[in-house]
Amino acid sequence: MVSAPSSGRRRALRAYATLALILTGMMILGVVTGPSGTGVTPSGALRALLHPEPARSRAIWDVSQTIVWEIRLPRVVVAALIGALLALAGVALQGLLMNPLADPYTVGASAGAAVGAAVAEVAGIAALLGGLIGILSAFTAAIAASALVYALARVNGRVSVQTFLLAGVVVGTLLWSLIPLLMTIAGRGDDLQRIYFYLIGSLQAADWSRAMLLAPFAMAAGALLWSLSRELNLMTLGEESAHHLGVAVEPLKRTILACGALATAAAVSIGGIIGFVGLVVPHMARYLVGPDHRSLVPAAALGGAILLVASDTVVRVWFNDMPVGVITAIVGAPVFCMLIRRRRAVAW
Image (cartoon, rainbow, N blue to C red; front, side, top):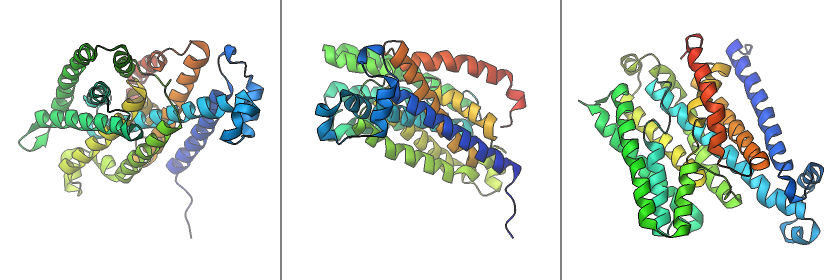
């Protein structure tokens, strides 16, 4: 006889359904709305979305087909994937370090990814292999930054959480200082613009090729984190208790850090620096589904996608395509303050 799902499982399923519906609605809204100067009405965009034409005939059939299928829809998909990646990176680092302030930016991974992507731009190799070289450069630098932080925090074969966060702040600050140096070396206007892009965060360059590059990274990061849910749950009991319960603590730390660097590098190499998603969304997801990482990982991915799709729609439609990180900061900072105030009511 199959037992009924537990109340926690039902709660998670309801949250998934709600988040999935919100994400679907936000993605549709992002596709059908746009600046008034485009000449494409919401009804026309919806009609183009529901009745697609082959790419070869779009130019002669209806401009709304091209705008919807070649500009808006890939941008919405890229926004969803980047939001999910940043949220997953936040879940990984907060779960491992058991610190509500841990995210890709406070542990140096984001700064490393930005430097790696900027170096690839200056060297003129970022666009090779359909943009994969840019992602690999960002990933390599993010891994190197994470490894340096890990080495600085490692004492007698173990890594202190507090020391890790402090080392992350120091390494991140050092790496941020390299960005102006790279901008000086670049000199050329196009290179300066592309490097500046990584500092402000923008989805203006989103297209289907970038969506195809991001999708495998998002699936890999999500699958890896979900497969390590039991270990992350046991880590909440403390390192000693987790070790006695069979968790290989130090290898787990290396794996989680690599996963966080992977997700961060992919997101930064395509969208630049977009703050607060990896910091705030895991807290919101934890509030919705609880601290169990089996439920938390998919909920955070959905929540990150919702936040970034909504933020990008706002800046694209109403704020002349300003950096999307402005909206995520405006939304994220007050929400984070509220969550900190209510932290005693939220289990870790």
